[in-house]
Image (cartoon, rainbow, N blue to C red; front, side, top):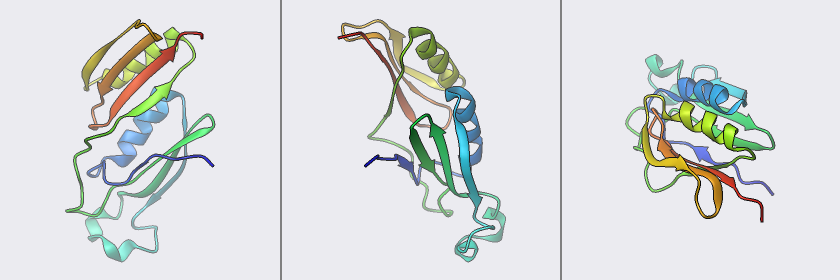
Length: 138
């Protein structure tokens, strides 16, 4: 079993831009992207929403994140959760954190803690909260 976070209502027409940004930030791969117009549910959204994302999948090594642009009027500002990225090396943590902070907001500066070589939290330009964690060896 492998949980896949699904950012179902988190993007208000910006899912494609967000997933392309994450692809670059995390060295991931957008493995699937379907627009509303190309889906069997095209009639569920206004015609001008047809180019928006009905479903997208981003691969990050063995993990995946899914997302979509909900139909107009169903968007909800993300709150009450964060996605935690476990990284192996401090330089990787620093690169990812700096990229996510572009046009975002730093909640907790990236620094060494008692449990991590690097830990920090940032709300990215799309409103998603990320915690970057590079744990110390046990």
